[in-house]
Structure formats: structure tokens, C-alpha cells
Image 1 (cartoon, rainbow, N blue to C red):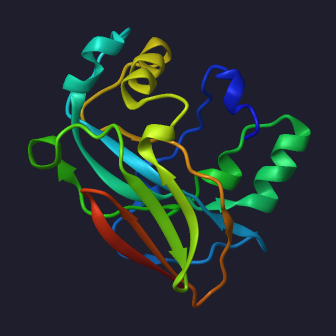
Image 2 (cartoon, helix red, strand yellow):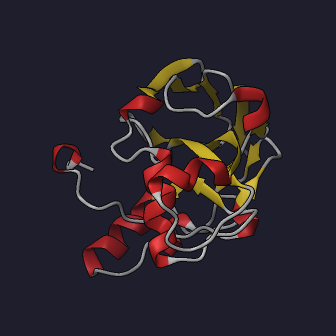
Length: 187
């Protein structure tokens, strides 16, 4: 968001359990004319706690998946202008299409590797997990200072540049090293 070099403290917004959706379809939501995609690494926790040390954070990871953070950008923009929370733009039903979960026991801890998103066959987002400003163990540790983390919690980690809008009929394909690919059809 333009502050990469500053390494400012991370910020978070919440999604609800019904936001995660493995169906492969994303119903274009009401109340918006500008819905955007953001490919993200999803980190699934097997345990949690409070004030988790960075050095201990990885032992709480069950596995990883690919996810797409769908955002009603027009609604988010209005909330930002008013200094309000973003949930109306971020935390709506089925707003986080998610692919298969890959346990750490199968893929190891992920600290690097390509992550991409294509829209209708055209590459839109390209990044590497190693480029994250805040690494996964740091994110877990930081979040645990403010919230008690627990088994089953899912953390989406942020997105490379190249976000853009979708329309009904579009197909998104996301891919990452060790995590394969999955498609999301906009319906």
C-alpha cells in the first residue's frame, strides 16, 4: 500500500468463517460495481496462544493454501475516506475463495516461492513469498499480541501488486510453488 520501505507495523481486518469458500465459484456480490481480486497465501493454524515468540510461531502452523481476497473496492474506498472499518468491503459472504490445504508435513514451511494470479488466461499478479514485508512467523507473533490465536484460525498474508477488477463470467487461476493451482469462476 505504498509503505513497503518503511516496514510500518502490519494492520489487519477480519473475515468471518463463512467468507472462506472452497467451491471454486465466487458469486458477484450486491451493493458493488467494483470487485477486485488479491491472491494471498493462507496460513492455517493447528494451535495458538497469546504473545507467541517469532521463534516459536512456525510450530503453530498446520498448513497452507492459496486464497483470493475478494474486495468490494468501491465500498472499501468509501469506508477509508470516512475513517471507518473496512468489513463492508472485505468481510462479505464467500469473499475468500480458498484452494486445497497442504499440510506442513507434506510441503514443509513456506518462506519463498512464486505466487501468481491470472485472469482469463492473462497473468496479472506475480510475486514471491520471500518478498513479503512481514514474514509468516512475524505475522503470527504480532497478531498474538492483540488476539488469542487458536487451532482453525486462518491468516491471509497480503498480496503482490497487480490487483484488478472482475466481472461475471471471468475465471481466475491462482498458483504457487508447492501448492499447485486452483480456479475461481465469477458467477
